[in-house]
Amino acid sequence: MDKLPIQDISLPIIEGAVQGDSEALGFILSHFRMYIRALATKTLTDEYGNQYIWVGEEIVSRLEAKLIAGIINKFDINY
Image 1 (tube, helix red, strand yellow):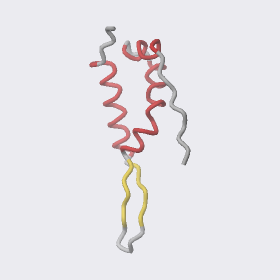
Image 2 (tube, rainbow, N blue to C red; image 1 turned 60 degrees about the vertical axis):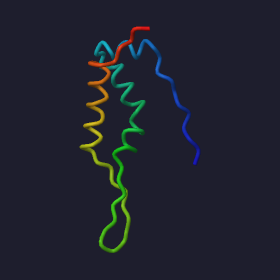
Image 3 (cartoon, rainbow, N blue to C red; image 1 turned 120 degrees about the vertical axis):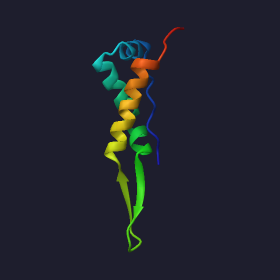
């Protein structure tokens, strides 16, 4: 399976996100969307042995909220 090319997040977008710019935060969330969904994915097995892939939307929401809070409250851009 081919991996998608990873796009860097530019410094102006990071600075905007730290200041609370909703567009910049949306860009960062979309950048990490596949990773967050992978973290929230579980394989479930029913009583017949069939396996199902399940994405916990509540877990996705919590991880996105933690990412936003971490960016706004804890991210230090002093360089």
